Image (cartoon, rainbow, N blue to C red; front, side, top):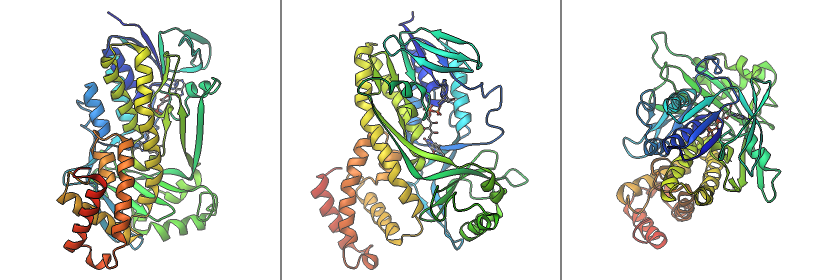
Length: 454
Ligand SMILES: Cc1cc2nc3c(=O)[nH]c(=O)nc-3n(C[C@H](O)[C@H](O)[C@H](O)COP(=O)(O)OP(=O)(O)OC[C@H]3O[C@@H](n4cnc5c(N)ncnc54)[C@H](O)[C@@H]3O)c2cc1C
């Protein structure tokens, strides 16, 4: 029995997962991807681009029932390995012992989900089908096929899972009362590479996310299973130093050797790569509504393009899918109820993770510079160990506590900040941070703020 039909636009990770879950709920699903099939035509040009997947992503995959094998190639990263400007290396754990975020191949997880989608009897995939138009009343859609003729596809419903530059979303901008904002960050980014040792092992510690925090800019590196690391340099687009100001080869060399001296032994042609590559911009998109006439919806980056500093974009998109999965059951396939409930549940969380991600650039890029910031983290971690029900650090709420919605994490995190600002003003905090009176005062303030539990 089928319950009706869906067009899903975009065969990225979120669109593929959505197609699987809709197919399993009995809908006939056409999954339309604009690009060629990466499993047949190598669109990644041999590059391993990886991302950090954490508990929200894994839990969502589990709830939808596609977790087997997904972790097989993932590398756990238990701490941040911080590379000081003098080459000094320090470790800052992500959470309590055993907590990890996982480095996964972006293309790999996408391909795994596409493989699963294609085994679903109700799902049919189409590549090189680029959406060009949508009728928001009827969910009918026009695709350009292989860059040539256009076809019209009819379905009962349509989801735009077509990423940060979503065409569905851009078409929705012509509808009345559609709110839209796009904000560019000062930073842009390029990807660099650290090759493997000759025997295929990693040249830096494998189970860590490496960060070279330099306050206004930073380099990060995530491990791949083949022994390489994918690195990302985040640097202002304009100003000094910036992608714009660094165009002479000698200046670029000075920039790298002056700021990332220890990484220079490992990075593959960083200066050439810097000079050749066009930096990609970072931007946020916030829109409302996320659904139209209870026929057409937005999901994943199409609904909420965020910046990557919390490593949550894909996690958040997978959570959108898990929420839909719950709502389909709760509202027994009544899409007149499901679409409004979906955007009501997810929009505040999309906004919250957008805000948290923006703020986290400062946290990441200032990690080694600001000793008071590190002290603050140390006090919080000690307090969390002593009173785990009363205080979960913000990073852990976002990353390791999928039961806490992003919006709640943001609210509680702001309260915690007020408490910690107070503690950091204690006159001898740098000397006395480990003294009992500091914990006593923190307990008093925390109970005043949160009651007996957070
Ligand atoms: C530098 C960087 C680092 C990141 N790091 C992390 C991280 O560590 N952790 C994390 O969780 N997230 C991270 N992200 C975010 C993550 O990559 C995205 O959130 C995720 O890819 C979103 O998935 P999606 O399926 O919604 O969109 P996409 O992955 O963008 O997929 C959209 C798909 O739609 C297709 N498409 C587009 N237009 C059309 C059209 N007109 N017709 C048909 N198909 C179309 C595209 O070809 C694409 O395949 C990072 C992002 C960046 C840029």
